[in-house]
Length: 116
Image 1: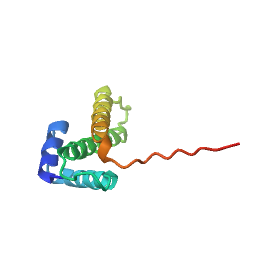
Image 2: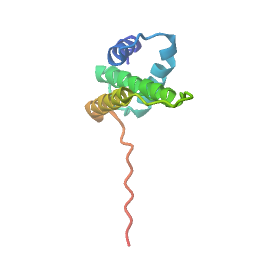
Image 3: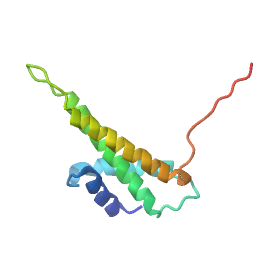
Image 4: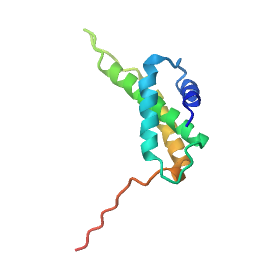
């Protein structure tokens, strides 16, 4: 995976400047994706860069959403409907890249079948 490309894609997805405050989010996304990749997958596949950037973007907007919900004023606060839409878009983007990288990701779903 190419860290500089991931940062560039994160900038594209988030519309925000990628600086030191975003580094932990991007590094965390890279580590999370590395843990999902199957042993047979090509780690230089550019689809993984897009997945990392989409995951970092989703985490970034989760953080912003959580911060927004924790702010209160004396008269109360009306939540911004736009923020919820941005988070939903980031989630949709992430799901799309998960589907795109489906052949490189380890299966993590377990099915438990019980018999009577």
